[in-house]
Length: 271
Image (cartoon, rainbow, N blue to C red):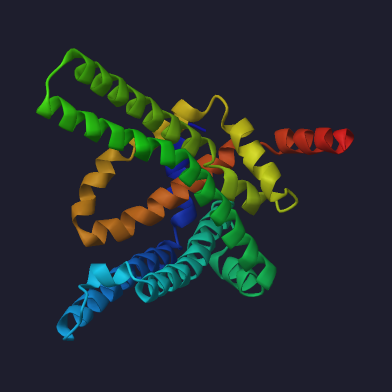
């Protein structure tokens, strides 16, 4: 299917599910806003109570402050990640033509294992992205360092090092985006094929995205004209279901059951 056909099918799949999908988007945005609001209130509450020896940010550097911050982050993580996985699963199953009520009913009876599995998959994905992101962050610091060096003392050596570090940062950014795209199919593989193990899903995502990276990028850019509407709250709530459904159908079109079965059969022979 081309992009136009995918978007047309997305509107068909959403027909009758718009309200439910908008409710999911509203819930996800509300959770994010509540977390931000909670942190802002904590900050202002701390600053209003006196006397304190430390400012709020200095308090976070202490052991009690750091421990409480880590505990809050863990709570936010355990609260958000399952919701993200739930939302993605709903869109993935609706994109196949399932009824929202049926999807909702079956997901309510999922075992605790599916909750743990969702968190595990997302955690592995975040660790993978963090490993890729660390060199990029370090290279940005190097660029900033040589910017200061060039300001303090203009020389050919400093200028060359600045240009090299900038080029290296750009290459790392491109590599990060490229590898991030390669993992795009991971959650959809786990949704559509429950017989695939987690680590196999990582490998299959790379294999199935081979030759489709540019197609994915062009598909994302095809939504650019809609993103202008995001300056208003209401269009965001309407656009997110349309985008998520389109992305689910797009990813589903890339997941070939034949290639997955071939990979699993080959792995079984090797073992």
